[in-house]
Structure formats: C-alpha cells, structure tokens
Length: 424
Image 1 (tube, rainbow, N blue to C red):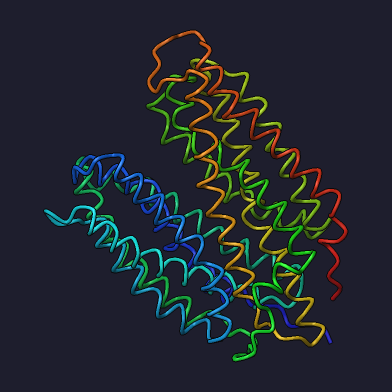
Image 2 (cartoon, rainbow, N blue to C red; image 1 turned 90 degrees about the horizontal axis):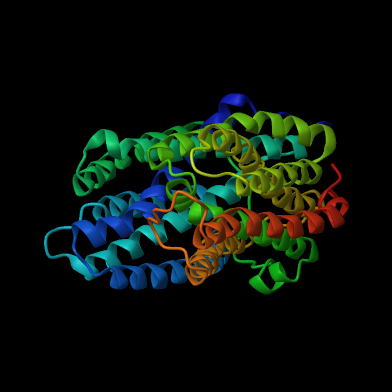
C-alpha cells in the first residue's frame, strides 16, 4: 500500500519554526561582534577571542547534544525546552546592560547557543523522520528552508527600520524575536504531524557508529568541501562589494536578491530532484555556482548589474544546497526505518551534520581573511584600478571557492548512485 502523502498544511506548519531559527542566526553570527565592540566598548580582540572560543565549543557540543537527544527521544519536548533558552538568551545578548561587559557576553552566548543548537538538531531530525517517500522528504526540507530564507531576509532588513542607532536597533530586534518565536512555535507544535516512535534507552547509533557509516561519511565529505566553498565568499562578500565593485550602498540589495532567489528556486530544485534524483540536481546547482563565481572574478568597479545577476544565480544554487543534502541524509536514515531498524540515531546524525556546518564558517574565516591580508589587501582600499591586493581579494572571493566547489562536484558525481541508493 502506498504511503499517504503529508497534507500541505502540515508541511507548512512544520516549516514555520524554520523562520525564527534562521532569524536568530543572523544577529547571532553577524551583528554581535559590532554591537559589543562599538556599543559596549569591549576591545575588538577580546570580542573576537570570546566569539571564537564560544563558537568552537558550540560546534563541538552538537554531536553530543544529538546523541543525548536520541536517548531522550521526544523531539517536541526537547524543542519546547530549548526555545525559551534561545528566546530569552538572544534577547539578553542583544540588550547588554551597562557594565555587563565580557561576562554578560559569555553567559548570554552560552545560553543562546545551547538553546539554538538543541532546538535546531531536534527540529531537523524531526523533519527527517516525517517523510515517507523520497519526494516527500525533499518537500519537507524545501519547505523548511523556504521559511528559513524568509527569516534571514526579515532579520537583515529589520535593524535599519527599527533604529539608526546600532544598540537600540539590536535591543528592539531581540524584543521582536520573542513573539515571532512564540507564534511560529505554536503553529509548528499544533499543526505539524507527529514523528514515528523512536527507541529510547538504546543508543543504537552511537557517534562511533555514525562515523562508521560509509554512505554518511561520503555525504558529509561532499557537504564539508562544498560548505567551505560557500562560506569563503560569505566571509568576503561585503569587502568585495565595497572595494572591488565600489558599490557599498548596494550591499543590502545584493543580499536581498541572493536570499530571495534562493527561496524562489526551491520549487524548481524539488521538481528537478523528482525527475532526475537529488544528487544530480545538487550537482547541477554546483555547476551553476561555479560558473557564477568564475564570472564574478571578471568584474570591476561599477559592475552592479552583472553582480546582481550573479547574486541571483548563486542564490538559486544556494536553494539546492540548503534543501537537497539534508533530504539525502533523510533518505539514508529512511533506509534503516524501512528495513525495520530504529530511528534512534537521527539526532546523532544531525548533531554531526550541524558540527560540520558550523565548523565550515569558522574554517572559512580562518582561510580567507589571512590569505587576502597576506596578499596585500587593505580594507577600504581606495584604488579605482584593480591593485594587487584587490586582485587577491577577487581571487580568494571567487576563484578559490570555484576550485573547491569543483572538488566537491567531482566527489558528488562519483558517489551519486550510492547517495540515491534508497529503495521505497
């Protein structure tokens, strides 16, 4: 008997929580450094050191949180426990009191990271446990990422609308986040379907077993290499826009184009995956990303229209990167479920997945920023012609990611049949 398709309203209800989780990620990773350095007055080196240590600890703890979540087993209960930590932690983080300083930064970061990680791991694991077919699983992840991209766009646009003062805008943003999180969580808990029962107290998928899974290791390898390729330009894009294109006033527009096109492309990637398979659709998105970045290297001052097209194309590729790899992981886990095995390891898998995703961001900054600095790039370089430093910036921003992405593409194409190996 064919599995009954999940109603669209239930899929949308599940996806709703993706909006505030992505909303929270933007200020957490983008605005906090400037807030505590400029408005609170902490030394930039101290802020950087605290963020580096806290983010590294956050990434390391994710696999353990995933394994612990599997043992407890109730995804909804764990998310419900995590969301107040996230909401209150982020609101406090974005509204530091006078004299709070580094202590306030460390404590609120710790609370926020624990809440964010615990909620995200179990939310993604919940989604992987929902779909009964390969098509349904990619629709679930695409719906979630569509809401997530909406959250990123809104979080990017709100601060300038709330206040011209950075500290005030961040404080208001934290206040806005709490009711947004509450409404979205209510919609998800009330409307999303229950997951199949998981086995608790039986750590069938220990972290050792997760890393021993060959198909998962290969999928994780492709994700990690491709993720570094995506994180490097994310680290350098504002520098590239300001100093190579010399269009700093267009930064907001370029980012909106990028994320809106990522969301708009999701239905197309789902359709392509349905016809040709997720791995092949993912490979097509990598080709699009590589072509986009090679073109970006050829741009110079004033090439705003061309870069807008590049943002649209690379944003469309991002849509596939967000939706298809988690769906392939869900397919891998569904193989166990259809074979009659426990789904107890889903959280452990997504804990490791989250670790790689977060580590990519830190590694990209560690690669890209020293490279362009050693090559002679200076922030705010005023040369109208492309100097050696600006040429290095363009190369690291565009050509290095294209080369890394090509390696990821070749591995994906080599292992494509193994990734598509689920039979239903």
